[in-house]
Length: 319
Length: 319
Image 1 (tube, rainbow over the protein chains, first blue to last red):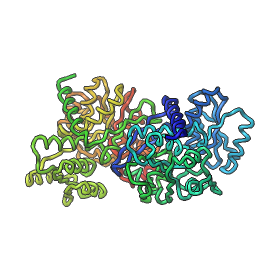
Image 2: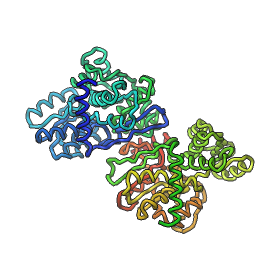
Image 3: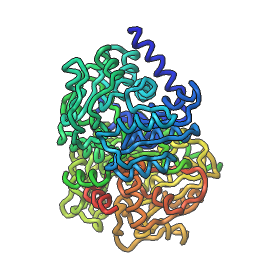
Image 4: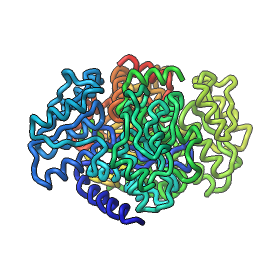
């Protein structure tokens, strides 16, 4: 084990302990689909996705370093609810910038968790700029959705649990958007057994991680991609994520899946696994079903279940 | 604890041990819906429902008593697949009588598990008569879906696991069709803590258990009921089930739910619990959401996930 892995794995352990009172230990499922599969069902996590693991670790770590007035995040989805819940739990303010065209249900869920939401004038394109403006005006600490060590270490806790339940896994696959979940996973897996193959799965329509892996440097998509997997629409992975995944070679491979493979995996999840997953949450399953993962006993991190109901009803009806 | 409870609880323990190599220990879930709830997610059981618990216990017990040539069962649904799997596992023949109008997907699933299926001329009305004919012609042992002590004891194993995970439950609710799951549950719960309220939930459209409870004797519906919950269309509970539930007063109450309450609970399960349950599997959840269960820390046995996709896609689209 390298010093890099040892140091960061210790931080993942610390994160797991820090967040334990606030998050669920989600189950590892075996199913009739394939006896080699172990499914880490993060759709059963609080707020319906793995995101509170990183958000709680970031907010609790900020509190240890000196209580901030509040936190700020930019998100239209699962990270927004996770930061709102973590802030409310420790009793500080949360400001969330959400693009104007976001799903109203997710905005309502974020507000219901006590967060202040700013939507007016926020677009996918200008949100980073607006964030800098807000942060210069108000004393708020940023909780980045992926390019943040506390967030990365928190996300790694899911795979510590998975490997405790299934210590002999040979392959572990997760979705990859900005790379928070994948880099936390890669650290935890490398410490457990350096020969485990850690795979990131993303839509072919949003293949920035794949291109970054191939090029050896961070590649940025020219525009926000269109994909069923709306949780991985980030245009580039983060610097810290690149460092873990590729500079330190803790990720073996990035695999891409087509929109049809994602749609088909949603149907398989809902009908054969009995898991009501969101399209982003099925990415590793899509890669497995398409035969794109290496052979061996395989753990899939199914990252969340906050599906757009209309989308899923259509997918199910067209089977 | 009465002698009746002690004797049958010992049989439930023996069943749990006997079937352990063949069934899954399904997870007990907590969710964001209500902090008092503990969900026993039997949709993750092998074949997608709790039924293999009873079927395996019956088939393994038959093998202990002297290897039969094969087993026979009448079912159009989850019991058929469970008996087929149990028979194949121990290497004996399974003959399943399935009514002609059954869901072709379930017939195919039963055949895929190696069972011989007879459908020609079988109707919901004549199937018991046809069963007697087949049994007189061939040396097959019957595995009744609910009115059989081995089946009842096997089904009780689910709630042993639930109470191991959540020992302080005050209320436990399960669906009730013929009463196999409910009577096994009632035995296991009474041994654990006689003050636990055990509740059976059935559709108001199929209220034979409710009427039997009120009348103090087995009441039979004049025809197979029409309900979304197609797993509980039996017209009467069994004699052994009545003995456990009402003669021995191990069930506190039978609660009925409307078709709209069932439909709404399916939507809640799929969208908020992230559990892709079949309508029968949500019956206890429907009663909980409708405020029809007693107060207290509550365990719901969510019995299965073999939904008719077309039905569920419609329910989701009309939310």
